[in-house]
Image (cartoon, rainbow, N blue to C red; front, side, top):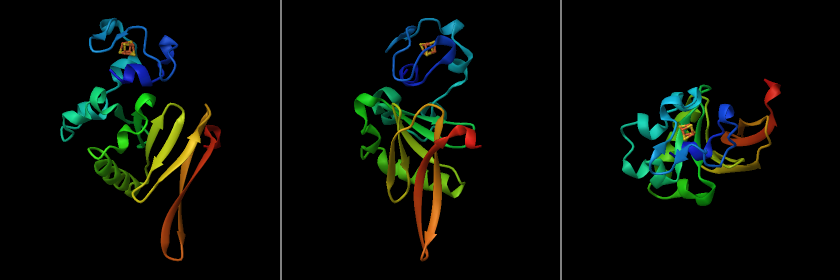
Length: 159
Ligand code: SF4
């Protein structure tokens, strides 16, 4: 149920990082039959990827995987365990996933509250707090035959 804490749910006026008033952690959703469409539509990566073992279950991992329609993937991390995704049980797999996404021109982000970390095969870029209405753009740079990356926070209206 970690998504019921970390996601903002607009129809419920629920902000990011705060438990939904209808959630009973460890029990379930108290309005399950009437939950909003956003809740019905979302399935975290652990539910849809059978290759991820029980240690990836969000209540154990303290983060969950969210696949977004733009092809980017967010690790939504409980801010009370901000480094959970760097645990050795997950980190090598996460780095492989970051490399695969880059090959497709997509990115893997760790989202810890409003702070975003770009996860790359060779390094991570912590861009800090990203204000509402902004996004992170990752730029590939090739200098003297060496590939490197830079990340920029910019308004979503830039298209
Ligand atoms: S309505 Fe139910 S499923 Fe949706 S966030 Fe709240 S507790 Fe979770």
